[in-house]
Image 1 (cartoon, rainbow, N blue to C red):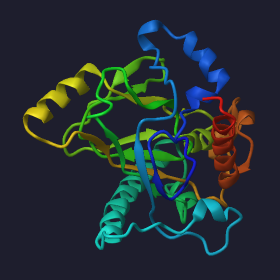
Image 2: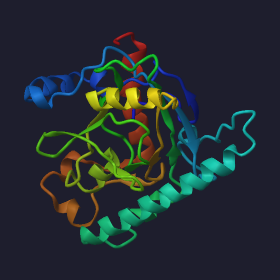
Image 3: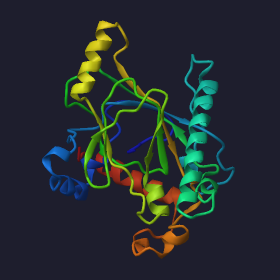
Image 4: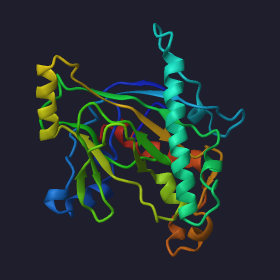
Length: 280
C-alpha cells in the first residue's frame, strides 16, 4: 500500500510499490529462488484506485491529514450509501477475525478491536484496464506489504494475485466464490512483535489471467480487473507496540512504541520521497 493520497481517486501510474524504491528489499529479492521471485515492476502501478473513508474519525487528532473527509464524486447519488454499506460489512468481518486472533494469542478479546476504534479505515476499490494492459507479465501492483493492520478483499473479477508464505514460497491465490480474503499488514506485525509477519504480495497478469480475458472477450464482458479492497487501520492516535506476551519476545526491541499515525506517515514518506526524486 504505497499511497500518495488517502482519499479520492488515485490514477494509474501514481502508486509506487515498495519493491521499486526499497534497496534493502531489492537485495532480498535477488537472494530468492528463481521460481519464487516476484515480477520486478518497471515503474508505478498500472491500477486505478478510489479511496473512500469508512466509519467515524476522531474529533481531535495529531494526524489530521490521515483522517481527511471523504470525497464524493459528482453524478453518483447512491455513492455514499453503497460504499458505506459494503465498507461496514468488510470492517465487521475484520473485527470478527481480529477478536478470534486476539483470543488465539491469549490476549483480551478486544485487544485489537479497541485499538481500531475511529481508525482511518479505507475502502479502496481497485481497477486495471485489461484491454490496454492484458499482456502476460504486466505488473498491476508490484511486490509489497500493506502498512495497515489487516487488509480484506472480495473475490476479484480476474485472477492475478500472488502471495508469499512465511517460508518464502510464492502462491497464486484462488478465492472461492462467496469468500473474502484477509491479509496481515505491518501494524499487526508490530503488535505481535513479528509473530504475524506482514504478508508480501503482488498483482500481475498471469497465464490464468490471459485465459480469463479470452473467455470474458468471447462473452462480451467488461475487461476491467476490479477488486474490492478495504484497509483496516489502528487508530492514528493509538500507540503501536507489542501487546501482552509479545512484549516479552526476543524480537520486541525491533518494534518500539510509536503512534500509528506517525508510523503510517513514515511508511508513506519512504515511498513518496524516493518516487518524487525520480528514482522510478
